Image 1 (cartoon, rainbow, N blue to C red):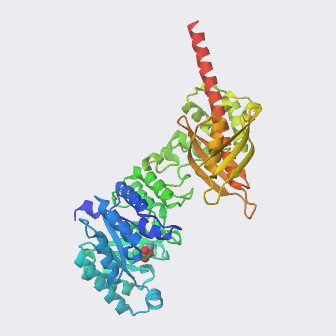
Image 2: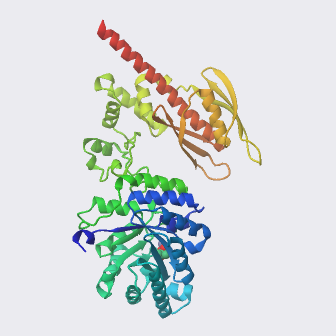
Length: 528
Ligand code: KIV
Ligand code: ZN
């Protein structure tokens, strides 16, 4: 192997197998294919597409994915059981290249209490299975399940036997996320030094995150000679999840020198898209503080941090959001934001310093932020154009809401009464669901035809009378507006959230008109 190849880390993605098996609802073939094609664009080397023997659905998904991948190697999982291995072969036999991944547990507790066999039996089963798989393909991976808790002498013996039988990749899983980085690194180091035929296979690691060590354990394993990491997008997976793809890829990318030049083929700018697609299709929200892909991962909130970032981004940013494919402005305006932040945001929105009084705007910004939490660009602009009382004034208010839905054949129908200015208007309409019916009525009443781009419900209190908060993001004239609604009835929360966003849009329209008027006056003044 050349120096470059020695540094190449293979990314084996198991989002569609280990990740999928932890979902509340399994994915259909089409959804799996969509994710697989995204993973290929992301630069993943091997995709574990499923466990073909487990169900006809999984079998078909593995086959479909195998048929559609062009660069990435498809792989299917099997126990050390003949019919499992044959099923992977049947699913992937038409692919130019494919991998069979076969596994058996090696720790005492699994061998004795789960499998109820002797360790010698386990070694024999592993050897037979690897040989059987090798009859089908040259690319065979063998995993020692629960390797993290396997006595090291047993682990060395098993790895040597699997390689002798023909395994080209040997995977060392920390199945229950039990090990600590120095310990896991030691296991890999021992294997590299004690197993005589270790150079005949790629050593892989597969870590779970029960103690929050999955990424750390995987990276330390690479430092000790492993060259394949098994990962899931967004760290999905059994219990606390698997090692997260984006964390390993970006750690190696950002700290390349520290890791002696180790690299992957992952395209960092595709990470955000992959994360959002997996979260959406799997219906598994990314926690806001999730490293690399969480909505807060690049948000700077404190005044001191924002001031630093405005002077030099590197003061508080080791990765730019753009480098992983996020486009949004990452400086959130809250009551902790400083004057520098507000001035710079207004400048970015096109207002030169001589067009506003920073002391006055900042004072009013803090008052608004205390009331509202996060302040958006359009709120800030409104401060420039509105007096205090106008800023509070709402054009649209919900007066009454009635919804009929549920039951076979019932078309969801809503009737909404709203106060608009000084008048009261009512509108009725249908929709795909109750919220859609309500939104259709509100759109007609406000005459604001915005597009819903994000909708989130969360409970803000516990129990039967829990308040449901709905947050919506809508697009209107290429700008994103946020709305929040709170009620014990989520349909009402939804209506309030959309009306909240419509009020912001309405105020922005007034701001735009005032801006245009000021510009026109300015031009007249210049030409006189
Ligand atoms: O965690 C684990 O040990 C596994 C194996 C099947 C590789 O998922
Ligand atoms: Zn696993």
